[in-house]
Length: 300
Image (cartoon, rainbow, N blue to C red; front, side, top):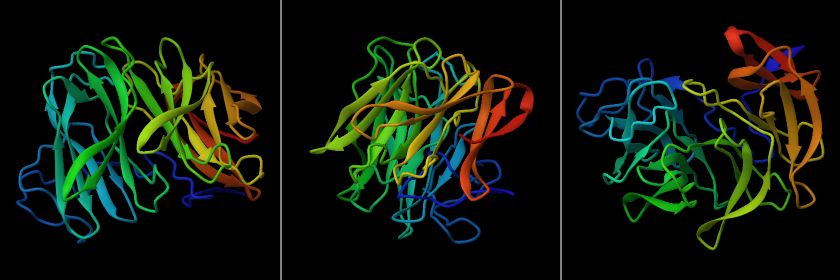
C-alpha cells in the first residue's frame, strides 16, 4: 500500500513541502491592505505584488508563511523559465505580523518558492532562498526575523560569475550529529555539485560535497527534484536526488563524515518534475516526476 507522507521524520523538513500557488493560496489578493488571509492563518503587508508563478511556503512554528514578491527583469538569466525574478521576500509570522526584505539593485531572488525550516537547530524556523548577484551569480541565503526586522542572517559565498545558479535540495541531519545541514546543488545544469552547509557560530560552513547530481531542468519551473527521509532505517536523514544525467535516483547519506551512496535506482525516464515522499509497506519511498508528466514510485 502506498501513502503520501506529509509528516516530518527525525526533525527533517523537506524543502518546499507546501507548494501552494500564489494564485490559489490565501496570499492571492495583492491589494488587500494589511489583512489576514480568509482563514485567519497569516497577515499580509499593506502593499504586495507576488511574482507570477511564485509559490507560497507554509510553516507551523514561528513563521506562518513566506513568498516572493516584486517581479524584476534586472537579472536576465531566466533559468526558471519566466522572464522575471523577485526583489522582495515576504514573511508572515505566527503572531500575525508581516515583514518584507527588499534586496539592493546588485542582486535578486532567483527562486520561485522560499523554504521554511529550522536551519540553526534553535527550534525556530528560518527561511531559505536563492539570492543571485548580477556580477557574481547565486548564493544560498538564510533569512530570519531579528530585532523586529526581516534580515539575511547567513549566506554562502556566491558562485563567482553571473548566470550561474544553485538549487536547494533539502534540510536534514544528514550526518547524524544532531544538527541540521542544508543540501544544495551548485550549477545543476553545468556541473552537478552537491554541497551540504550548516550554520556554525552564526555563519554557513560547507560540511560535505560530492558530484554527479542534478535537481533541475533548465528553463523549468519545477524546483523540487529531491526528497529527504530516512530511507535505510538507520535513524539518520538521507537525500534522494537524481544523478547528473537525471536517469537514476541516488540515495545519499553523510553518516560517517562523508557523502556516500546507499542505493542507486535506474529510472524509466529522465527525472524532470517535482518529487513527493510517500510510504510503501511502512517504509519511505519517492514519487519521482519524469519528463512528460509521468511519475514513478522508487524505493531503495
